[in-house]
Image (cartoon, rainbow, N blue to C red; front, top):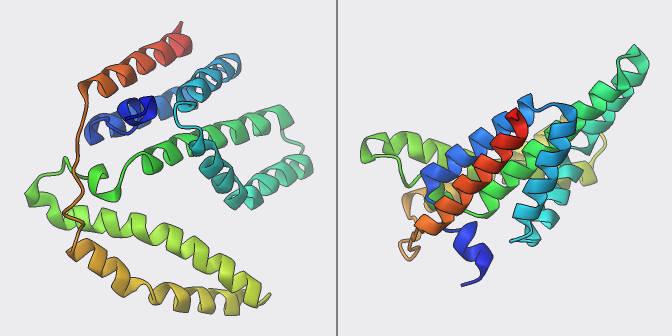
Length: 203
């Protein structure tokens, strides 16, 4: 297995959630200069799986209207433009962490640590994660068919509704062939990464 497979893909799901949450906290509270250092270190870490940058850029394109809106609002309201650029940088950085979480885990793995008593909650979370990309894809298709907002929403709902049965089947009939194998080495590497980024953030 590749180095990326050993370090990024084989973290225990509970540790991966904690890893992403703690790293996200560092991103939110880090000073501007330290944020740049954090970004550089995390980018090097993610190089273990270069394809993640393709998914990240695709995600950035999806939130491009939000980024443009922030910039326009900043110019019109005469806010501190530097602070708004910093906000965009933090949002983009957090998006990278979200992409890492989703693309290095299967839906089954993400919630594997939840007990059987929380099965209903697990199914709800799984359905939500399966639904979100379908919604955005349906919205993109609807925009190509009409420029009228109400019609776009109607088409989007119709296209999304067509996938409900598929989502239900994926939840009720999970792929039993998926073998979830975790590695302590992957968790140790992630813990070292957290220590490095924590040192950068608080030193």
